[in-house]
Length: 400
Ligand code: GLU
Image (cartoon, rainbow, N blue to C red):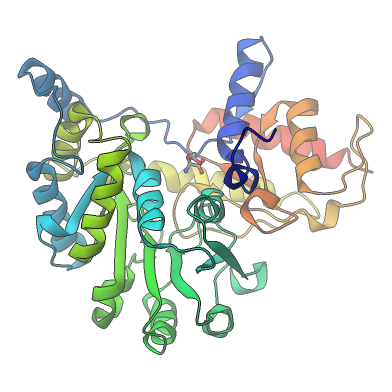
């Protein structure tokens, strides 16, 4: 319809949100559906954080704040970056937004001119390319594969960079694969960036605290301090603190970029929810004691899902380092027909058939730029995961 903008025609609705909505609708209609679509912890927000929000309401902290966050939260964010990442930032270098999404979007809006390129390693989180398109830039997909553990190699990064490249978007542990870059692997990438001084790095560290076994999280400006001046380090409270609905994301980087992001936010949404900001202060400054026990639960669930899916002939399910996703390959199932007679031509058909035939909602791999795969979010109860994996096993066993 010509009334709508040309920009809009370049983007698609978020598939992660679409799958979650579809699963919710089916459940509401009485269907027996297990939702493994949304990437959202099933844990409740810790009580001390909820209490801080209630206290904020009682104290009347319910009015506008500075557009990109209260000073108390910016100070808590600076302390977090120092404590966890050894990175020194001042509050003037910090921006707080309505979720990690707004932070990334503001940064792209603030920096991209038509034709500017953004290198995005695939598999990528569904919103990166579309955000780049919305901001008028060109996503350049650098394709990683199962063989490289879903990770970008230095050569691939080198190849993707052109004189028009403005950003590399980096995400580890990754949504959708859970793959994490070791310090040495990340250093090999930052070495490439050091040879291209016009390229900045936007690092999405949202899954920092969700790391298992001996995986050690690290972030670009920490691994290569010389990149500090051209790094936007993005993070948020959604995943580690089970605060998805509170919508608080944040970033730290050069003051000039932070000021530009503030300008955009001041003309669009103004400040993120005041009450959520006070809750986030408590999340970052308060006890971190629940992170380790939560990770024990996530790791147990990861191992359960990987072991059950690995029993399926023709399914390859790599063991992720972090986050709460697995990203199995179904290459061996393409061309087969499901028990209800669906020809599995690609991962989208596979995901739809899983939902319709056995009531398991997952997100198809094409949405993340690597097919044929699908993403499971295992941030749900062990019982639901066991039942879901049993249904997937049954569905796959019925393929002919
Ligand atoms: N990051 C989550 C996911 O991938 C939340 C949904 C979204 O915002 O895309 O499922």
